[in-house]
View (cartoon, helix red, strand yellow):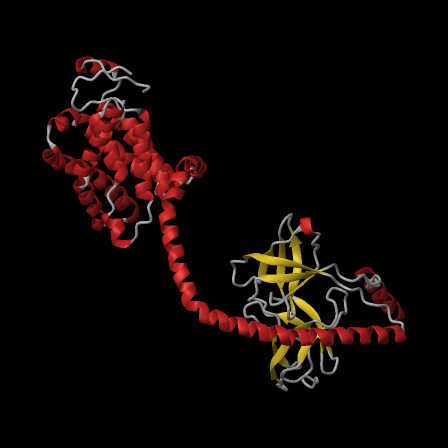
Length: 171
Length: 307
């Protein structure tokens, strides 16, 4: 483990390797890159946003606005969208995650989901705003992705928790 | 990295989240603006895509597998049409083979006849197979780029044909590609003969349609529908006797000095993907120089002196 974290809350803040963070972001890019089509594309949750928000919330001193912005640039390249579109959205998302991190970690999953939905809505609003500035119309259907992202928040949190738990157990 | 107590973090963290947000938001807005207005960032994008492309390629795998499975079933259902196509090709092959045998016999006969009249034998030509790589995007320019270039000793002026007739001529040679101007290009000329009676003429491309037309044929010229036009070999660029076009329509209007004749190319000028490049044009003795403009003016002066 390259970085040792002296944890205050033994329950949640287990040591997390940088490899896990990088791999999870790459996996999210992979999931975003699957050939989604038609209605499935509309319903596609933004996996990268979810993973980044998770890390911003749980490790705000390691994954912050800068790293999220970098991941956003990579997402722009992967999506062939305009440079800065995802980067701007993810910077806003990370800001929400970092600022609210302490409060969010106090909540249980159900309360978190409600708060997180607002952050996702803001992120999607940034996309919609950029799209509106460039093309002059807003595709409301794309906000469906915001909904699915929110719904998948709880499963994602549980998966990450299980992974971190097992990581600790195996050591 | 050491996670200090939370009160200390605030001082060690550097700029506050708000400052960072403003900084990165401004940076992304700047990127957006540059990308929309100037498109300067393509090289950056391609550099970053090196990082992302393995993930993308991985993400394309499930879709590709799915498509392959679909293709397998389509192939199964098309098997019958494939069998039929195979039969057709077999039949075509047989008839072609018969024609080739006939052609060989004729060539031997021709050789003997030439020996008799002691004409210089036209040089045999060899062919190179080339594939069409790019087609010209402009509808009014009939050009294609083929996959053989200077590396395969292609030279400007070589003739390009397919299995049935003349397709065009090499007009530009790049290291690995060469440009073929098709015979249907506007004002592209091919010297031809009518196969039936040996009448000599020149066909020109029309440019906007895939038609050809012999332009300066008198109204009373002996030419009929379905006449085959073959290269005459005059001018030494095109080898003689290769089919070029077939007459499809003749308008003889006494009001005009020339008949309007429309021909269609015999070769699949805009159909095939593989073309044959004939080896260099046969060497002919140098053409005598035409009288230059200077000579003309001298002559005019002489006439004036006479007067």
